[in-house]
Length: 100
Image (cartoon, rainbow, N blue to C red):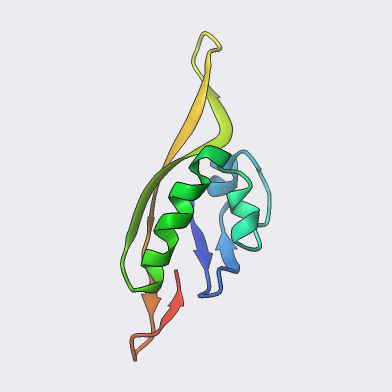
């Protein structure tokens, strides 16, 4: 399972190697929203960006999008890699979002 954590300003505070492998950028250290959006197909950017504000209202976001990294069938046919993401805000004791 790929994991990405960001602060409330969308700066990436943690990402694991499984996430960067799935995104097609193995070993990358993601730093901000632009660094991981760069690995998502451009056609899906609007979809992802339209869902992100939900997190800032305290909602959990569920989103499916395609990575630029293709997956290939056994006979070599390439298809987009679909990613299902769930993002949940982490709140402090007073209900203020700290991380997501």
